[in-house]
Each structure stands twice: as structure tokens, then as C-alpha cells.
Image (cartoon, rainbow over all chains, first blue to last red; front, side):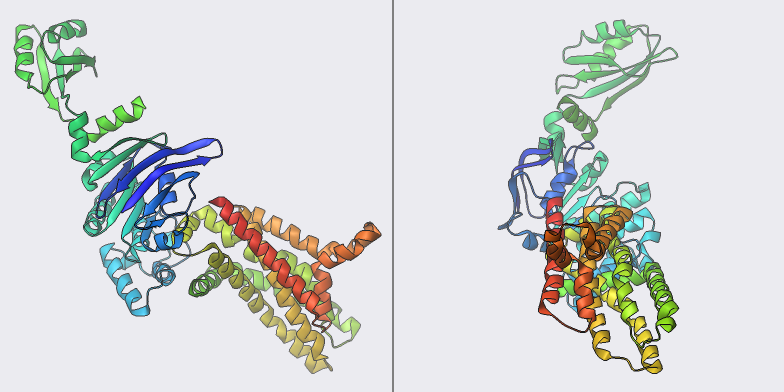
Length: 311
Length: 234
């Protein structure tokens, strides 16, 4: 549905997006991940025709962003970061205005506003000025604005940034609900959010794509090495390292958090075999008090850190 | 066309949501009323000439105050990003906002019709210069609104937008008053550039196509420059 080809964007001398290319399929919820300044917002601004690319193009269905901006804008709803809206306007008036710009007829307009008020849970603030709303409500109004034209594609830039945990869950639920019918592209640096809401993630770092995969595939491909966490009392790190090195399949042993006679280490496993039994057998022979022994499941967070730090 | 109407309506209503409209209109009426009526009985003539003489100077700072927020505020708040990703073109946004400012100027001029009625009751008023004056005021208001809009598109700071707009408007108003400082060869050109010169022609009750062309073309140039500034932001 969306094809990004050799997209590059320069701000003066600074390259914000560097020759990226990927495709987004219809009905997909795509998470755009990356540290601050990675180029996520710039990409979204180009996709929504707010900015022109320095090189390359984006094809949305049969239209490209350079020649058919208006057609693309019609099939797209966009919520920028922090939902910048008109603070003096009432929520109801604002949604009316957006509906008018999107050329909805009177009947459809009223139905749509009513429907969105229910979907985004903003009915109780419809007659309040936007400037007086809490951040969570502003975000919901922004979301309602983005969905007003019933767009095929929704582009959401950090839709949960700055919200409290309850609001985050509510917004995620809304996104999941709409994601059943629409193609959604959302950017975030909250990795649990991408895990919870997206089908696929594209990780961008310094303007370049460093990973593009389904979440599960990404975890599998990069997460073959398990990590075992151990904590001991009366143990010396050098000795622990030597003892554990005897087990075939043990990779690195890293001291993580020690103090007050406690030594905590992370043991990375180079093999997919379960080596916990062998490790335990060796520990049992030593004069150490074993306080903790657990296998860590590798989260997207570990993968994200590896990818964005390496690059 | 429909989008222009929607943007015009939204912008026009926005003036009256915030207190700015009421403050600007009140200041405008106070200043014009005070300066006009303080000398009106001294001249003892049933004419609005003094009012129209004052208008370009007053418009030079009132209209940039009206237009300063049109783009600056949107850029500052960030709503500009939402607006420009809605299915609208640059031209629709510019024309919509421009017409909202011109409509505001027209509304601001409406209460001054009471001056006309008062003077008509006091003496015999020649309708030609009065009608010409109001038509000229709308042309002048449109030009200054276009300049104010351009200034507003240049910066996210409303005060800077106001200062830029006011400086250009003042320059256009005063340029033909400074001619004695300038070489004779430039007099004709500079007089033609001056907005006050053309406005005063129309305010005499003479609708000359050259004056109309001046206001139409210079307003267009300012709006076109606004379009270029917005394109540059992409």
C-alpha cells in the first residue's frame, strides 16, 4: 500500500533521513522505533506531505507524494507529536472544522463526530476549549481529528507520549480497535508500546533503517542467545567467571549489580540448548550462597539497545 | 473554494473568541473618533476628509496587529502541521486567512459609518468622497492585510510579525511624504509605490483604474510572497 523508495531528507547540512526504503502493507500496524533524533518524525512529515524529501519518493497506492499530495492527504489522518491543536476552539467546533475541510456532508459530519466522540471517549469535553483539556484528552481529540475523514491510513507520532499509565492503556486500546480496519503507522520510543500494539517494527537510527521485521521474528532472529541472571553471597567475580566458563555454551559473564557482599552477574548463552542444569551443578560444588537464578526473556528493549548502540 | 470558506469562517470566528478583536476595534474607534472629532468643529466643514487622511497611519499599526497571529500562532502552537496535512492547498489557506482579515477590517470600519450619519445630520455631506473613502479604505485594508499575512508567515513570534508588518505598512504610508529628501528622478516612481498616494486619490471620490490596479497587484504580490515563504518551509 505504501512504498518508500530511497528516501532522503536534509535539513541544511544535517541528514535526518538517509536513503531508506521499505513497504507497508494494507491493514498492518507498523511501529517506527528509534532513539530521539533518529528521523521518525521527519519520515512521518514527509509521508503526510508536510515536508518535501531531498531525494527519493513515497508511493501511496497509485499516488506519489510529490505530484499527488492532495489525494494522499485525503486518504491519510495524521496526529503529530503532542497533538498541537487550536487552544481557543471548543472541541466540538474544532471537529466540525476538520469535518468541513474533509468535505463531509452535514449528515455524515454529525454522525462521524458522534461516533468519534464515543470511540475516543471525548463526549464529556465536547464543549470545552481545547486549551483547558488535560494532555490525555488533547491526545484523544487529536486522534479524533486524525480519524475524521475515515482515512485508510493513520499516521500517529508518539501517540502516548507524556500520558499517565491509565491514559496510555486507553489510547493503546483505541489504536488496537482502529487497527483492525486501518493501516496504522505509529512512532514511539516506548518499546513495550510497540510490542503491545504493532504487527511489525522498523527500527531507525541516525536516519537509517537498522531492522525491519515482524516483532516475533525480530525477537527470534536476534534473541537466540538467552541470558541467565545469577546472584551470590560470598562469591568472587573472577572465580565465578572461571567456574562458569567450564560450561560449554556459556558466552560472556558480566557483573551487573553488586554490593554489600552480593555479586550479581548476567551469563549469556551461545547455544540454544538449556544449560541451566550444568551451571547449577557447578555452582553446587562451590562454597557460595546462591540467592537468585533466573533466565531472562529477551525483550525488544534489549534488541533496540543493541541495534541503536551498535550503529 | 469550499475550503477557503471554511478557513475564512474559522479564522473570522477566532478573532472574536479571544479578546483581541474587541480590543483592536475599541482602540481603532477611540483613536479615529478622538482625532477626527477633536478638530472637526474647528474646521466647521461637513466632510470626512480628516478621518480618511488619518486612516492610512492608523491602519499601519492596527492591521498588522490583526494579522500578526494568522500564521505565527499556528506555527508556534504547532497546529500549522495539522492544518497543512489536511487536504488543503497553500493557496486555499492563504486566501482563507487573507479574506478573514479583510472581513475583520470591514467589520471594524462599520461603526465609523455613524460618523457619516452624524455629519450628514449636521450639514450637507458630499456622498462621492465618502463612498470613495470607504472603497479606498477596503483596498488599503486589503493591501495591509496581505502584508501583515506575509510578515506573519515569516516568523513564529507574533511580536516580530507585528513589527515587520507595521514597518512595511508605515513605509508605504509615509514614502510619498518623504519625497523632498529624495532625488527628483525617483519622485514619480516612489510616489507611485506609496499606498497613501493611491488611497487619497480614491478617497477624493475618483475611482481611477491605476489606483485599483496598484492595490490589486501589490496585494497579489504580498500574497504570492506568502505562498513562496510557505513553500520554503517544506
